Image (cartoon, rainbow over all chains, first blue to last red; front, top):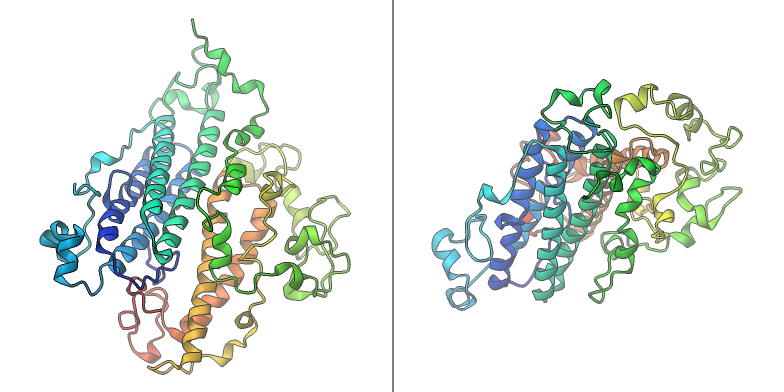
Length: 210
Length: 255
């Protein structure tokens, strides 16, 4: 269960409209490395995760990614306020405008709508944790690309914050991977899948497949 | 032929493994963009009275040490004796209520006891961490926006609130903005600490920090909801009607 707090995780107050930048920043919502994919990735991986402390981590980070979806949407919303039709046509925002007016819709910078192909839930803790770490790094790169293109400080500040969060999440998932490895047979991490095989029970740990 | 033994993590001390993920140093030195350095956001995000260093000197801890700052002295009550949490020795704590080192050590992890209640439920932990992560990674910026409060509204009497009107005057708007900003800082500190605790469940410093921040946050959220409207749909004060939908939404940029 979730409850909503009427508050952004990081303040967004943009004065100057910039539809071109808005179109690019939309990718942080529904693009291949966007927050929507991130949130779905972690919240769906939770169920097959056998280690309770990592279920907690996935829940907490998955929920935080929802905060980030709202921050990105707030940026896009405020960048597209009070547009003239001339601005829309000249900025390259016209294609999005045609399909969605000023509605929020998760698309990538190149215009592809959000797809669940963007994330994976493999049911194997080591595989999933590597997926998550890679995803955080890809998102960091995306934010750095956006920050390079942005000129308005009001836009850059929340983007910077989001970039920093990707780094923290990467660190936490790295630690989670260490915790998982600690629970496995250190001679062969891949002797069994602790998310599926019964061999993952306490007595058998470290005894199998030597 | 490649042998898995070359990846033998068991040879190492398991609990040093998170050094393999030591990105913190890099972060601190990251300066790819001017005026966009990591760590600066604390300053921008609401901590207007940035100079914690100076402020803490005003507190009455008898053994004040600049380096240990807020951690050791609870400035909410400057007359309290300094608690030597750093040492975690038996003689260290003068104030058991403030710092639960003793009881925690008995409950959890003190003797590398994996069967103790705490460690069974959460991750295994072999030792009590008596160091501060920031210091270990050399990231101690000496200012923690969440800890460095004593902002003027923190000291405000709570019964001063609850006189709401539709139109806020300039001073009230200013107060609302500051209060919201402060809540955002504390809320973020809590989120961040919770993530840290997910992978470091036995870190006393983090547990203590979590407890302090949670208390402060609850108080300010209550103040905000009382004065300016609900933060969650369970915090609506119906004396003023159903305000959940009528006060501005955060993405509108009206604050």
